[in-house]
Image 1: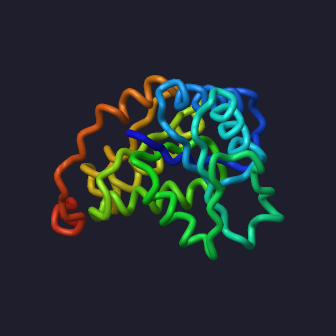
Image 2: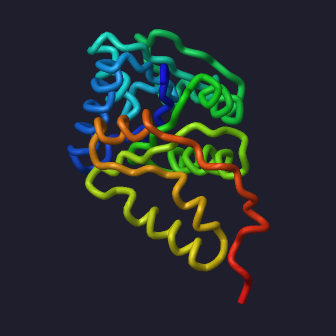
Length: 195
């Protein structure tokens, strides 16, 4: 892996562990020679991971739509900042630039990016690994929801395994590096029978 796209909140969250984990992930990426691709902001967890990666002499590539420059406050010291015309272009370019994906804690934007890239994996648009850095069990309710949706027949149990989840950056990066994509299965023909 040469670059990993990280989805993260533009707020820091209420727990100091969130910012600490973002910094640790940024440092670990740089130490392993893996570039960071992210949304280009300088605030919140987005800013924390970018700053930590840069401080450890890592590559940081941001992608930001022009309309968000004022609201998200673009980071001024990135290795490269791409400007695009829409959120759709932002997500597509981040996906093209990355070899894997990680979600840190965040809000609607983070969830949107995570679910879109997971859906793309589900239907075979890409075979890149996707991971959750499960800081302070932030993603536990989300994983429970995914399991619930699977039990109710909306997600093939096979596809619940698309999201790797670990509590430390090192363990998650190791898992992403050793990931083998599963064979593509039809999400329509292999769902459990309806009741």
